[in-house]
Length: 192
Length: 100
Image 1: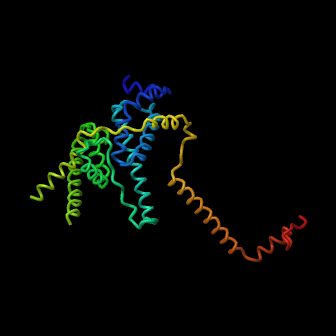
Image 2: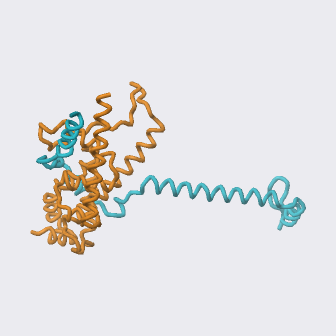
Image 3: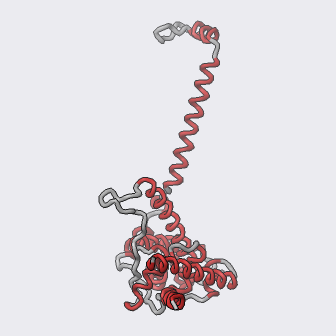
């Protein structure tokens, strides 16, 4: 059954159709969430939020965009909401507990993230990449994740982000330039 | 030379997710989603901490404004008027009402 048809059945309360849609999109949704949030617990919660939203909004799907684009759009929005929430929490906890009470170490440094699907020979580089991605502005992060990690075309990314293809191209160029700069800073601090 | 090495390293890092497999969620995740979906919307709906804080702050401001207004009114009431009210309603010193 086509995803569009599955959504129609979901809107009528068909649980089997919901399960089928979940199986079709679970890896795309979860992998995107994991790339943004870099934490399995947060990624699982965001994936839940996405599918709950899909279930509630199935009747509202009008077919203006493909189901894949519609689901990616929901996913990106949920991830950005959660990232903003996490950042707010971090800012607040930074004020209350800058130092770990036991070790005296700084607590606000995010832990390193290892993507479970990365090839063994690229493991170290991907850790550096995800650390650098965290520092990009939201729209550059979105363009880069959807292109480099999800492997979507510029047209698909443009539809998801609601911008033109040229804008996506420019966002990707800026994202790569910023990542190179961030990485060169790491490189310098490692040498120094 | 160093610059060249760094450029190559940076490119390797930027392309390090090439050929990576998509991560797949835990098998139990769908059951959790089903549970959330089966809860009626009115029961499953949550209010964010921000909304709750804003509502609490609004109530606190309203209470404070009311208290400030009441205390201002009490201060402004001339003692003669207060006496007249007490006499009119026959309120005794011990707080009991007189015979109306």
